[in-house]
Amino acid sequence: MPDLNEMDRPEILQILFHPRSEAKSPAPPLSRDIDIAVAPDAVIGCRLFTAAKEAPTILFFHGNGEIVQDYNEIGPLYTGQGLNFLVTDYRGYGWSTGRPSVSALLGDAHILYREFNRWLPEHGYTGKLFIMGRSLGSACAIELAAAYNEDINGLIIESGFAESMPLAATLGLDLAAMGLTEEDGFNNAQKIASVTKPTFILHGMRDTLIPIWQAEKLHAACDARSKELQVIPGAEHNTMITVGGILYFQAIKRYIDQVTGENNWRSRRKRFKNEQKN
Image (tube, rainbow, N blue to C red; front, side):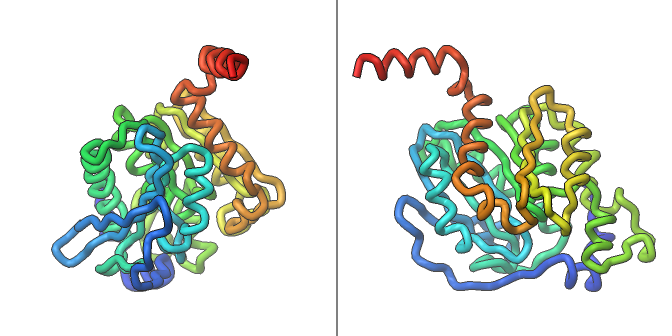
């Protein structure tokens, strides 16, 4: 993992992160909370929505300004598609402790991945694991997909970015004037070039915070033989689910079924025969 201390300047962190603290709420039905210690003074709060222990699990890193509790109504939409949904917070977000930083963001992602790679099978979860990141969370997801390419089953990116410098400029940060380059940032385009596992990228056509060209660059840079970029017409940065509706979740389910083999011709024929018997 690269040293990102150059990005951990106060003037950058105050623009880049927008933590929102909130006390832990009761876990919704069919979900449970899991707290992971990532440092002596930092614990990350996570919430797991379970469809079935043998179902595929999505390890999800949310966008900036969001917290785990924001997904209380979204989690059941994933389980309704037969997918387990494990959403994580960042330091200082939700009921998580500690203070956010760029270096901690990616370092904690590695800890969370390793911990859940152990925790899930220990608690009887046997389905395949997929990594997903939205907006800021795309940096965590791409970091992990590049580092653990041989171990994961697939990568999903929603409203993600390829280059840090243009995004920083949109947020009002002139990183070049600070003497920083793309290599000092998240470097998503370079990292995704080492990802060979099936990759699914979703993006809003009307996204002005992270324009569509960023998604196109991620798609082009990705080294996976099986990769797809799906653009949602009319969707902005924060309206992907609102505009896409149930089709958003069905598209993710279709991608995962293709990866796991649930959507191949043999499984379709088997389901057809079972339906005919019934």
